Length: 494
Image (cartoon, rainbow, N blue to C red; front, side, top):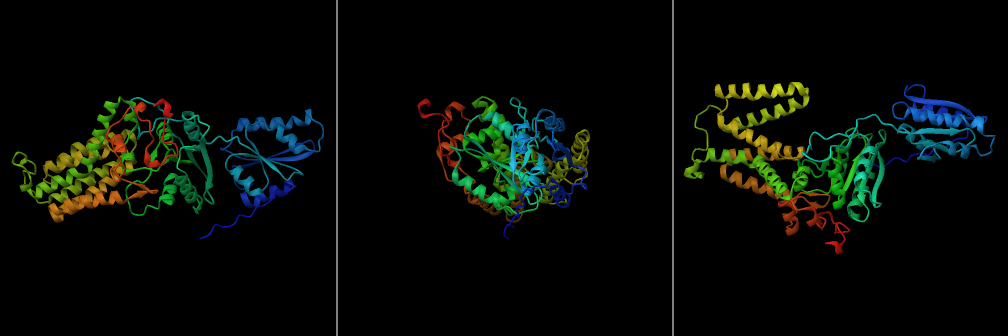
C-alpha cells in the first residue's frame, strides 16, 4: 500500500471561494462547531475561521477587536495583509499558502484569517483544548515527590518535561499521524545524547504509519512501531509521570508523546526497566535498594510460587522432611490444578470488575468477594485453604509489579508453567522455566536485548540493577541506549 499523494489547493484571492471550499469539504454550515466571522477591514473582506471548544474564546474576541480598530486608526493601504499580520497580537502567527494546511490548522484549534485579494492566509495559535489539570497518576504514586502528571494535552505534556530539562539541546520533533484524526505525535530527545540510529528507526516507523486515525493514541503507535505480534511482554515502557520521562531522556532514551494520551512511551527498554519505580529514587540508596529487592521478590513470587507449590503437591518426595507440611492436608474431588485455575481466574474477575465498578462500590465488592465467597468456597469443599493462600500470595506479587502490562504477561507465563507442571511434573517445570528464560533472552525491543544487563552480561549495568546507587555516583549513562555522550557529568567533575 502506497501513501496517497495529497493535492495542494493554493489559497485563492476570493474569500467567497474559500468559504465555498469550507462548505463543500469541511462542513461549514452543517457542523455546528465550525464557525466563520466576517469582517470589513479597510474596505477589504476578512473572514476568520475557528472551531468552538478548541480555541480560547476570550483571546479570539481580543484579536477581532484589534482588527476592527484598524478601521479607526489606519488609512487605506496597498499591503493590508502585512498590516493585519502585525495586528494579530500573538506569539505564534504563521502564514499558510494552501487550503489543505489551512483546514488542518483550523481543525487543530487554531484561528484561520483569510483576506480578500491575498494568496496567503494567517493562522493564530489560540488553542485551549478541553482537559484536566496535571495531577498525580493513580498507578505511579509516591510517598514523597512531584504530584504533577501528564494529561491528555500534548502541549502541556511537553511543557512539563521542558520545565525539568531547560537544555537548548532538548528537541521535540512533531509529526501528524492519521488520515482523518491528524493526531499530533512528538518525539522528545536530547540532541547530543540520543542514539541517531534509534531516532532514525522511530522516525521511519512513524512516517510509514497509514491509518484513518489513532483514537487509542499511544497503544496504536506502539503496535505500529514495535510490530509485537503474539509476544505478551511489554517492549516499551509507559509512564504518566513527568519526572520519570525527564529522567529517561537525560539517560539517552527517546520518548514518544501522543496527543490525547496521559501516558508517554519510553524507548528503548529492557525487562528491568518495567520493575523500576520512582519511589526507589525518592528514598535513601539503602532504602531504595531494599524496596527494589522486595519488588524483585514479588515478581519472582508472581511467576514461580504457584508452579513450585503444585510441583511439591504432585511429587511430595521432592520436599525435605522439615517442609513436609507443605501441601493440602485434605482430600478433595476437584483436582488441585483446576482449583488453582479457578481461584486465579476468580482474582482476575475481581480485578476486571473493580475497574468497571464505581469507586465507592468497589471496596464493598472486594470485601464481599474476600470474606463471603472465599470462605464459603472453602466450606463447601470447592477449594482447599492452601490453594486460596498461595493464589492470594501470587496475586499480591502480581500487584507489586509497577508495570501493569508486565504483571499480566508474567501471569500468562505462570499459567503456562502450571499447565506444564500438571502434565509433566518435574521435567515440565524445568523445561518450562528454561524455555521462559530463553524466550526472554531472545526477545529484542528496537534492537535492544530485552534481558540486558544479564544477557549480554555487563557488570556495571548489573550492579545498577541490583543496587540503587546514589545519583552522584552514577556518572555514566546506561550503555544499552548507546548514548553519544556517556557522561552525565563533565569528566573533570567526576
